Length: 477
Figure (tube, rainbow, N blue to C red):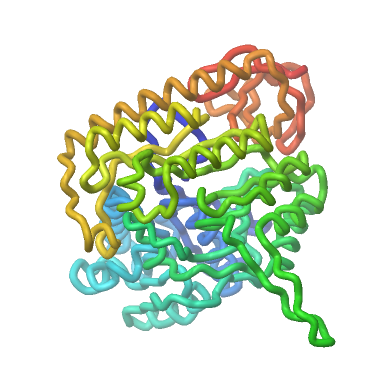
C-alpha cells in the first residue's frame, strides 16, 4: 500500500517500481537482474529477499531493464488493473528480449500460480514463473531457463518464512526498512485472493526478526515497519528449553516490545491490523513505548453489517466503532487510517450510506479507497454476482473520496500549532530546499532546511504552521 494520502483516489496496489542497486563494487557480479514490483509492501519486501538470493548466485541489481540478463516482475492480483499493467509490461519486456539475446523474463509473486499457463504457453511472455513461497528455488529455475526449458515453481508452503535470509535493501532511503514477520493469511475475506496466492498463516521466528531489526539499526536505519497480512495474529512458539518445560509463546504485543527495546532511537511501525484481532495488550504496549509510532491502519472495507457479513469480515460496524473508541481511549493521539471498498456485490444505497457514516465516526486521517474489482478464484466470485453497475461504483467511490478529503484536511488543520518529533527521510519531492519527514501518526511533514545542518535519519522538533489536505507544513524549532 501507499504510505501517504493524496487528493486522488488511491489504489490498493502501488505502481510498478524498479529497484536501484546499492553495491559497493558494481563490477563484482557477472550478470545483472532487474525487478519491477507492484502491490502491497509485502511484495516489495519479497523483492529484497529475491535480490539476496540472486546476489548469492552472482547476479547484481540494475535499475535499467535493458542492461539486465534477468528481468522479473513481482506481481499483484488484488485488482484487475494490476494484472492489466503487468501484462502490458511483460509485452514490452518481450520486445526488449528480442533485441538482447539470452535475456530471461520471469514472473514472481501472487499472479504466478493462477496465470502461469497463460504467461508461459498461450502468450509466451515469460521463461520463469515463481510463486511467493518458492524463491529459494530461483537458482535452479534460472539454470533450467538458460537451458531452454520453461521453469515453474508455484508450490505453497506451510512453513516457509525466509527467516534465515538477510534481505538486500534495494531502492532504500537508508532510513526506513520493511521487516516481514509472517506470511500468508487465515482470514477468508470473500473479496480477497491472498489466502489462495500466499497460503496459510505462519509466523517467523521472533529471534530472527529482532536480530534483523538490530542489524538495521546498527547500519544506520532509524525506522522499521513490521509487515504481515494480519500482524495482530502473529504467534510464535520458540523451541522448548531443555528440561521438558514448554516455551512461552510470543504474541504480537510481545514482539512489538522486543523490537522497541532495541533502542529508543529506533522507531517501530506495523501494518496491517485486522479489527477483530487487535488487542488491548497491543494498544497498551504502544502507549508504553514512545518509539512505537501512534498510528494504526485498521481496514473497515464497509460500514454495513449486511455487506461485512457477505465479505466475511467477522465483525460488525458496532464492533469496529467500539475498537476505534478503545484505541482513542488508550492512545488519545493515535492516527487511524483505513481501506474502503465501494460497490461490493449487492451493495444498496443504505449500505453505502452506512459506510459514509462510519467514516465520519472514525474520522480517518487518510484511507485507501477503491471500487470492488472481482477477482477470479475468490469466494465472492464463486458465491455472488458482481451486480453493481460501473457508473454506480464510481459515483459511490467519488462520494467516499470527497468525505475522506474533507476528513484529511480537518485532521491536518487540528495539528496546526502543535510540535512533533519528526524523522528526516530526505528532500521534499517538490522542493530540494525543504526536508520531508513523518511524525508518529504517519503524517508527512515538509519544512525548510535553512541553515540547520541536518541529514537523513536525524530527529528534529518541527512546529506545524500550515497544512494541505495531504501534508503538514512546518518549521524547525
